[in-house]
Amino acid sequence: MQKQNDQQRRLPRRGKPLIPKMVVLLMVMYIVDVSLGLPDSLLGSGWPKMHLDLNVPLSYAGFVTMIIALNTIFSSLSSNMVTTKFGAGVVTLVSILLTTVGMLGFSISSQFWMLCLWAIPYGLGAGAIDAATNNFVALNYDSRQLNWLNSFYSVGTIISPYIMGSCLSTSAGWHLGYIIAGSIQMTIALIVFASLPLWKNTRQVKPINHQTKRRLTNWQMMKIPGMRTALITFFAYSTVEQTAGLWASTYMVRVHGISLATAAKFGSLFYIGITLGRFFAGVISDRIGDQWLVRTGCIVIFIGIAMISLPISNDHFAIIGLITIGLGCAPIWPAILHATPINFGADKSQIVIGIQMAAAYTGTTTMPPLFGWLASHFGMKLFPVFLLGFAVAVLIASERLARVAGS
Image 1 (cartoon, helix red, strand yellow):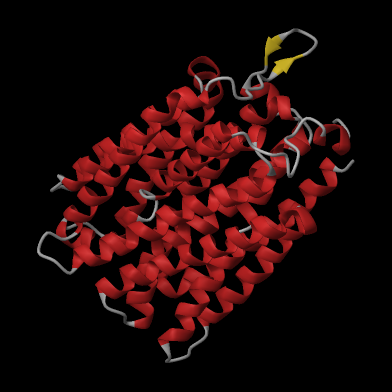
Image 2 (cartoon, rainbow, N blue to C red):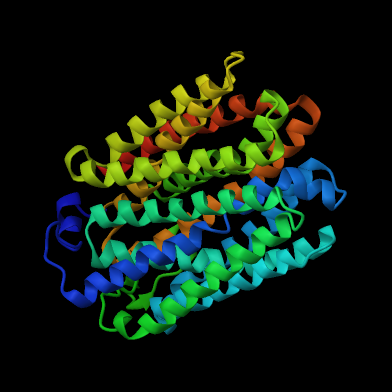
């Protein structure tokens, strides 16, 4: 593995002035990440009412997220190939259109199998855009912009629970929530379409085996030291964030006795914590480094978990705890993403990020459904314990990855 300082020379320099074209494109990228976050928190905030209307068990949310995540894994693993062939701009546009189709499909669904059908384009649109946008910013902008990019993802996850919470109090219900969110998504797609000329002549690095001069495959990348540890880190972190995002509203309803509409809005507080935390992390990221951001984030998560699990009658204490968990999650994802070109090389970052995204969505595929099954047998009070176990796994795996990358 190359030395860390050699890797740094291949990355964008902090503080380098951006030409107007790149400033405008960066603004578009921020808007794109809003579109990436919009779909992710809709299901969790609407599910306490959706499962009643569709007459399916509470745990069936896990099946929908599983279908979404399986298709996201497929598109993540394909992201290097399609981005290299068509460019990040086209891939981003098509991905947003696919998620728009999925969300509008949810809005007309009256049976559970229909949700499962529309979950296919819902998921296909997420994986490629996630890998393409994060690698694009990592190659063309500094680390501060990568943190702020992911904070705009959180803006999308904040907006959608408020949309859903407001719609649940009307006769149109969750169907209207998906119509409104899908319409926002379509507007963002039009913005990306108008910006396509700006994506040309930006930095794209192809992963090449310098001995054979052939493009590296996903399987070849798995043999690189530290790769498996990186995948465990992404898997565990994704489990914490997605399980919290999906089941927080239900936890508030079942354990704290909050109303359905109020709990849907409270679910967004988790994402508010992520948004504020990522903005702040962007300010200090170059000063304290990626690994300390991960360590601090894990400690804050532990504090938030303790707050939501204490038997205190005041619901505001649990709500603050939910925000605290979000604050803890905030710096972890951008930090481990930012470290990817440094740990594995800028020439390999696109394919590595694609594989890491696949690992993250594997956690999304398997763990929230597993928790749903466990909660149906042992109760929603298991929620804080489940989050704690995987938060500890994030800390242990990230520490090991830092040691391997530094060797």
